[in-house]
Image 1 (cartoon, rainbow, N blue to C red):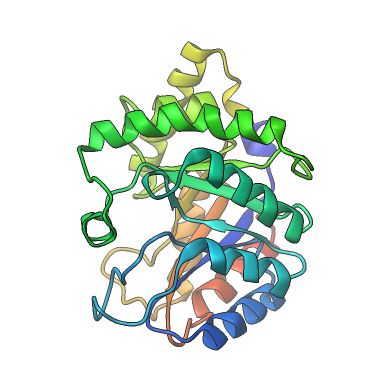
Image 2 (image 1 turned 60 degrees about the vertical axis):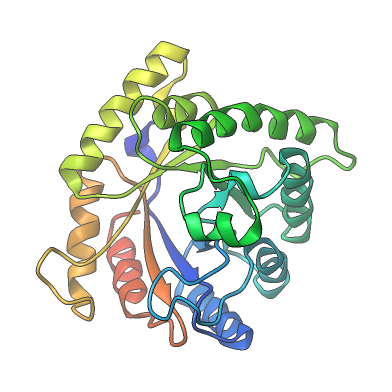
Length: 271
């Protein structure tokens, strides 16, 4: 399937902050009913926005609960921090959630960046380059462990890699990812697509094998509540090859307005 032939998909990142777990679970049910294709959380230990010491929950135990609480949507982290878990253990965790969800897990993963997580939980922060080198080292170990587990994963678990670094990150994407997730406007995303295509040529990968994903926000200068602009933002990204469109939603209310707008845009013919 070429990149242009891929169906449009809509994702929601339920940021696990400033909410009780029942509120998060209700948001999952509401968004699945609205028709989203993928539900993401994130892999941090403290809120990124608002009260930095506010309520927050851990990523992977939540994904296991989502696997039971949902029926249709794919689930995953946007993204797992590679630094926080032994790669062999992470492979087994992912395989287990894959089985609980009956084959709906996406392994979203990145090299990590939020220094407070590292400092307060006792991980070595190191350097950005060193964390990327560790990601490149660990992804083959995850893939090898999947091949040895009994029972095996229910499917070839899709790997999503987040980040736009052109020298290291996009090379790792070309070597290992099924989905690339980036941030920025259409010009930035189009440029990153071109760089990723170049890396695919260098490593012998068909670039059409990699689904292109991006975060969606309202057009510059518009307020977040102007939800009609989310479809306009998605359309601009669609025209440069993006096919998975994700909006971040924070607790406690997880306003579904932007998602409703994007689902309507998808259903009107972008899919």
